[in-house]
Image (cartoon, one colour):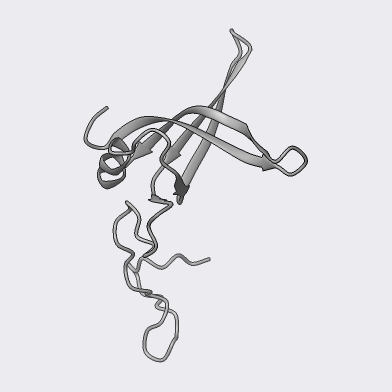
Length: 115
């Protein structure tokens, strides 16, 4: 779609232990958001397997049409063949919880949340 988002038709399935067949339990369009994530998603080939990372799910009910819409946004994912755990999100900042002997940093402007 653009540099920061792209839509992908995605499906999930599970193996039925009784029939030993795979059954699809979801199929729909999913928005991949973020420059790195959108670029990586645009390169996916049909049939590629991925593991989702950070995902946002929202629903909206249209009272006029009496229809509920579910929107999925993916912010990070990794390919099933990626063993190093890298994904499309920005590199994780160093753990800021340990400062001076492991005490939490509690200064104004700190990125650490109070809860």
